[in-house]
Image 1 (tube, rainbow, N blue to C red):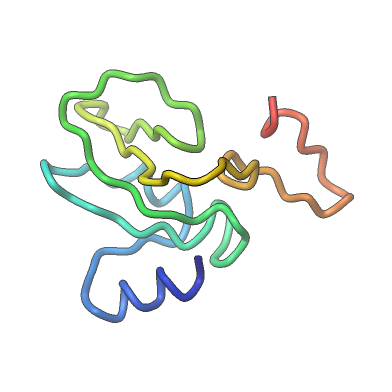
Image 2 (image 1 turned 45 degrees about the vertical axis):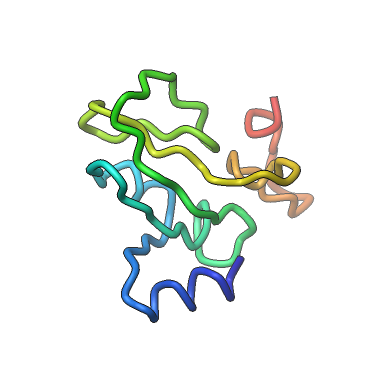
Length: 102
């Protein structure tokens, strides 16, 4: 993911560093955001999100993110297998990742 977000950001696309940053960002129809990582860039939790103005889905902390102004949702664009790092798992053998993988 690191190459993708750096390339996209360098070409002028909107990018945010973390999930917390994405939650603070309200979108508009057609907006696409490149997320660098869940907690920090290149931690495996990054991805590409598109604003869905009609979505009322609940926030799942990984593929659907409800911003502070809940009129729409950031929805992860991905057609591959899910990665627990998308939900904040660290996989460092120190952090308890139970909540992130449930």
